[in-house]
Length: 127
Image (cartoon, rainbow, N blue to C red; front, side, top):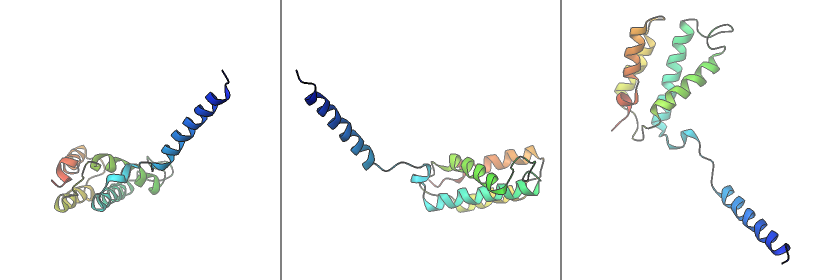
C-alpha cells in the first residue's frame, strides 16, 4: 500500500485543525467585563495604590518597586474579585469601598477587614 496518500490525508487533517484554531480569537480575562466593571477595577486599583504610596509601600526598596507595578498587581486582584459582575457595579457601594481605602490607616488590620468586606463582589456587583 502506498504511503503517499496516507501522508497526504494526515497533512490535510493537520491543516484543517490549524485553520480552525486560527479562526477563533484568543480569549482575554477582561473579555466579559462591562465598561462599568472595568472602571470599578481601575478605581479600586488606583485607590489601593494611592494608599500604598501614602504608607511608603511604593518605591525602590518597598513592597512595590514602582507605582505601575502596584497598579498592575492591584488591578489583577480587583479583576479577579469583580470578574463575575456581569450586570455592572452598584455605584454607591463602589463609593463606600473607595472611601474606605482612601481613609485606611497604614497598619490597621481592622480597617483592612472592613474594606475587604465592603469591596467584595457580593457588596459591589449589581443584581
